[in-house]
Image 1: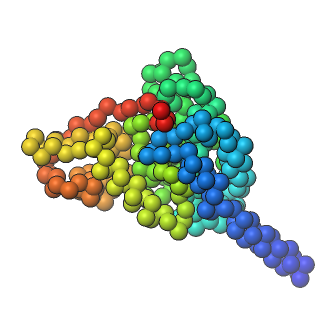
Image 2 (image 1 turned 30 degrees about the vertical axis):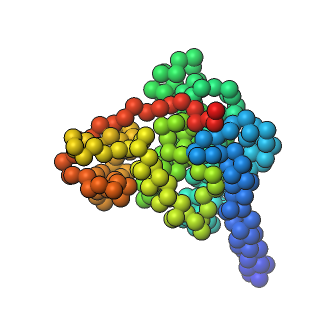
Image 3 (image 1 turned 180 degrees about the vertical axis):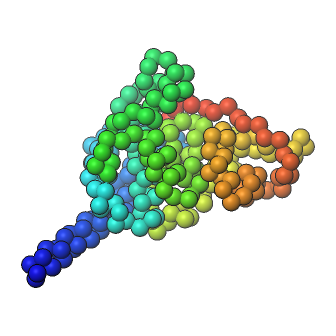
Length: 252
C-alpha cells in the first residue's frame, strides 16, 4: 500500500513539474515578433532567417501533452492556443514562401482554396499528441472551449484584412489587457471598421458577419461594437460588410 502511495505521489509531482516546465511567457515567439513584426506587418524574410528559433518554439508547443495541458489555467490555455495559431500560421507561410496570399496554398486556384478553406484544414503540425490544423485551434478549441469572442482579434491568418499581428506574445498575466487592446485596436481601425453618421451606415469587417453568433451571445452586435466608436451608433444602423483583403500581411 505504501509503495502504491509513493508511486502516485511521484506521478503527481511529475505532472505538476511538467505543467510548470512550459514557458508561458512564450519567450522565443515574443522575441521573434518583437524583431520582425511592425504595425501588424510581418517580415517573413526576417523570421525565415531565424527559422531555427521558430522551429524550436513550435517544437516546444508540440511537446505539450494533453495531460500537461489540462494542468494549465484557463488564461494559460488561451494564450497557448493564440500563440500557437499565429506561430503555426507563420510557419505555413514560410513553408510556401514566397506567396502573395495564404489563399495561394492548396490548388493552383486561390478562389477554390478559399472557398474550401484548404490552407486552414491542412494538417501540418502536431498539438496535444495528434496531427492538427489551424481550423482545429480556432473552431474546436478557442471558439468551443472558451467564452471569449475577443480571440477573433488576436488570431491572425496572415492577411491584410485580419486584425494586426501584435509585436508580443500573448501571456497569462497580460492576457486581459492584450485582448482588450486587440479588440479596440481592430474596431478603431478605419480601414477595417467605420461608421457614417450621416447615412447611419456601419462599414464592418466580414469577421463580424462570419462569427456574429460569437459576439451576440450576451448583447446585440451594435452594442458589442459601440466600445470601439466615439460616436453613438444608432440601433437601426445599416450594416455593410467590407471586402476582405486576403493579400499577405508582409512588410514591403
